[in-house]
Length: 204
Image 1 (tube, helix red, strand yellow):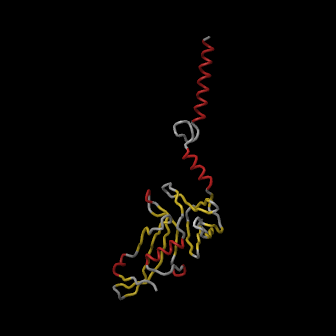
Image 2 (tube, helix red, strand yellow):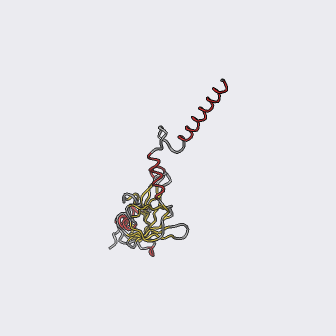
Image 3 (tube, one colour):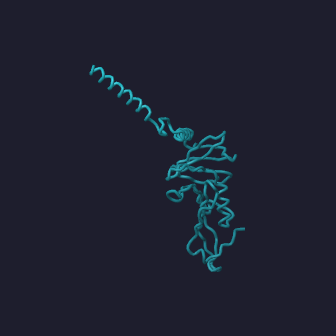
C-alpha cells in the first residue's frame, strides 16, 4: 500500500512539473498566457526586412531610390536630393507603401518620416543658403545623434558659406545643421567660434 501511495505521489508530482514547464515557455503576463505586447512585437519584427536596392514608394507617396554603396553605406535619394547612411535600415510594407526604420542604440525603433529633400530644404533655410551642391563640399548624412534616451535619428548637412569677418574680410565658413528625421525639426546648428565676428549674407 505504501508503494502504491508513493508511486501515485511521484506521478502527480511529475505531471504537475511537466505542466508548469509547458506554461513557463515564452513571455507571460503572469496568467500563464503569452503577453499580447510580446506577440505584437514579434509580429512586427517578422514583417521587417533588410532595406533593398531599387525604387520604393514612401508612405507620403514619394518615390524613394535606395542604392547600396561601398563600406556598407546606403544612399537614399528623393527628388534629386540624396543622403548617405551607415545605419542598419529595415523596410516594412504598409498598404503597398514602404516604411523605413532603424533601431537606435537605446533600443528604440526610429522611423524615417522626413525625406532628404525636405530635410535639406529646412536646413538650407535655417543656414540662409540656396543650394546644397556636392561638388562644392555639401554633404547630407542620415545618422544617429545624441546619447542615451536623447538619441534620435537625424539628417546632418555640412557645407560652406561665404561670410565677411568684421564686415571687411571675406572668409569661407564651415556650417552644419541637423534635422530630426522623424519630426523635421532643426536639432542643432553649428558654426565656427568666430562666427559672431562675421556677417552672413543670404545667398541670392
